[in-house]
Length: 445
Image (cartoon, one colour):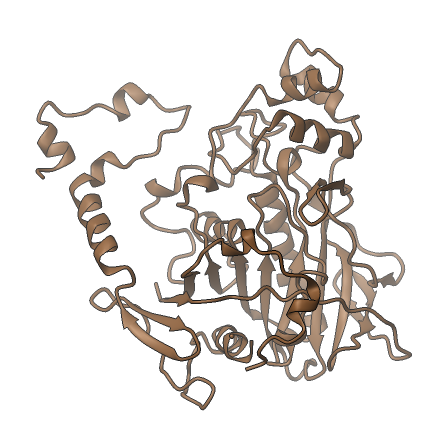
């Protein structure tokens, strides 16, 4: 597996508003029908916004979604305002609708059928509870000028996306399965937009990066070819939770209905407005995350075991670029306004987007050195753990957090047998048996 590691000293989140129509709105003929986009006003590219890729079952909005049917008429892809149900982070207001499973596609003018461009698919973060894909947060102008196509999309969050009940109707990880449907839609349709279906890189931040890692570990289909993990992996402690199978009854009671069993509770909750549901989740302080699913015969299962137990990822040898910030999560204490972002240094932006775009295009963030990228970012090997520090100057180093990682490497080596995730459907008395000779199990310090 090829891996590049980075340490970003400071990473700006760019907030951008873009809108507008022109007389030359583009029209594409995709496998799902005709889709009309609009011309961007801030660069030489087109936008196809709010294209539905899947639908939620109204009788069971907590279950798996289904692919959206083909369009019978031209779909006008002008609106990216759909948000899945959540407490929106900027104004702390309850928003959203279950008609939210949409993709947004940003295509440079250079893309056409004879010049298919590589594709970057971005998964937003937000602890699997908040987030949306609109260009208010994830505008495209800095990336598409590097001749790559950017795709963003929504997936269900909170109870609709990650309620795990150990039942065939709500097995868990519906949000991750939404993501997988989005990847399939992109893989099948991106060539109509001038994208290369054989050069798709998935990318995410925080829980979006954890999501990308889950797909690396568990996907059985080759729906993407590379991955960029920004400040998150499937191994993060917050990335998974033991399911709260009593959540439906708790929510029903909070909403004024006392259910005698899970089936009754789900039947009631399926009729509840999503805003009321989101409010009840917030009031109860419930958390929903990915989980290990049980076997239910023909029911699709995504996460079949804990990531720590996976010795060989399903996708095998996939190039990966991953890293974190030196002051991770500092943005949570930030009080900058949109006006403060107007004078960002175009040079902490061209450098980072060029690195990412090079990886998307060539599988190598620095295929050659330039004035902008004067340092060769070397690939990670077993003997040389290279990483790149991105600051005012680029610096290639070895062994990020060397002393700290040496400790954890040694601890893991001595206690590898003890690090096992247990599923609820396993015989824990057998799996967790500790040998009489504890030193054989835990190692000799």
